[in-house]
Length: 162
Image (cartoon, rainbow, N blue to C red; front, top):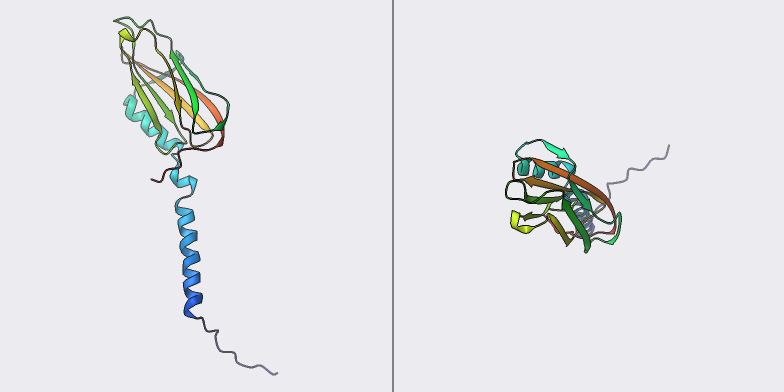
């Protein structure tokens, strides 16, 4: 048997620095991955819980219209309408729009009064990814109603770091 002992390979300082650099880039890539940047369903549920204070949320009365397929998440037309007479005794106090895939789930809140006339809102929002969007209407009698819509976003927006 002709076995020669080979000393361990020497690693130069430059090799160590390159390995550390690759590890740093890998770690940074994992840190800023969409799983960490975008909100999750649990985050959206937490926002909804804060808005409603654990009150029961009923289905209906709220219609959320959003395109089912969106090319660019930077400019998405969103329409919310709530079936309400908008009288002094029965009106919509607020409409909250929540998106589970955005960095900040609470997209916006619109406050209304009986003088608003109707409970219809049309606006443009940014969506970070394909997701479900909810609209929650807070009524003057303290009840909450919700509606939702799902959209597929091909080019994401809202890629801010948290």
